[in-house]
Length: 115
Image (cartoon, rainbow, N blue to C red):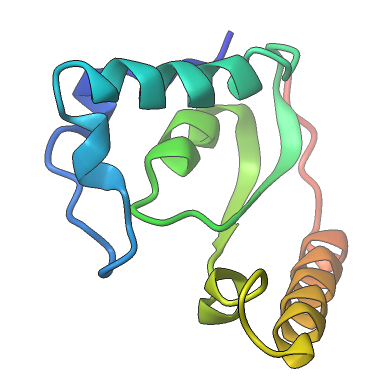
């Protein structure tokens, strides 16, 4: 099972003004933030994967958690995603284009079989 732990968070710098990484380190709120991420990670079957893609990686904590499972691990983050809900209609279109580009990059990566 994949799990984001406080030890994985140690030393991760804040990626920008909207990165919530500091909340993960707080005594009470941190447990809620970790629990939220770990519930999602609990849905991923524990095995090796040829590729792992994280969209909206922030400080990279979840990517560090997924890295041992993927031969190729890629993270994609973009300012357009931060503006999707409140920005102009182009924000969603831009986010969709970036996600499609990331999917194509992942598709085109050579896959190495792993045991």
